[in-house]
Length: 277
Image 1 (cartoon, rainbow, N blue to C red):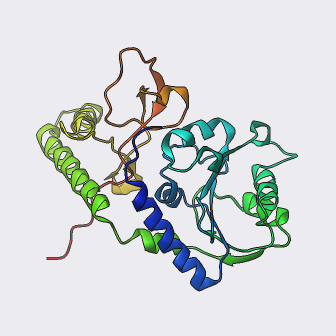
Image 2: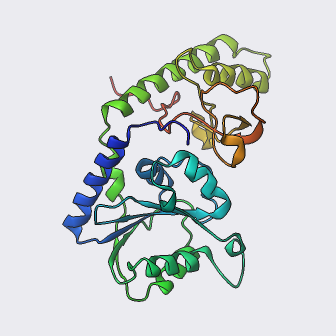
Image 3: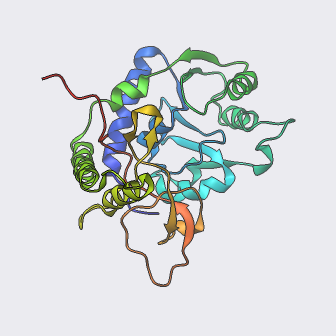
């Protein structure tokens, strides 16, 4: 397992806040489909969500459960803070098949766990959670009572802890470095690719104390955000896939692989609508 970005006590505090809100709404199980919320709850940090992937939070004092593709469960064992039995992989033969769906398997797993007749909160408004996936999950849990839980976790996430604020301050340093480099290199006659390469180098380099992140041109706003850039992963990350690089130095004896690693999900945009004066 790699070093967690936050102490386990912080993850436990997040769960307490989530369960408090679940209790207010009468929810006995929360199905988390938003990728950022999954990371917030478990620490899992892989770009595997283009296949169905959920995090289940029961109301009782138990660890959350991450469920995703079997080959990505290896990444969960490396990055999530829970016990190995709470990182669950569904069979590969359920991926992109007309006669079966991962949510069929996940629904059966929930039933086997004894959670099939609960009041279940679900995030409907989540990227990568498809209408078909939702339909198959609901069909597989006919005795469940469903409740809209959109933004339940998001509003809790909005209040940042001291360690999260520290990451935001580091991200601000990266944003400053990227903008400063942009002012240096952008000029008439300079190719866009050369300018972007230089800007991205400044942002990825980070500082001696922490690693940088690449940028992402998002829509016409050209906002600089983190990007799932494939890089040579070492230090155990080469044993899995879709994880993102970060700052640990590569060990000479480790075989590099093409995977993904990044900073801890906190970013600061460097191109944004300026605040009112």
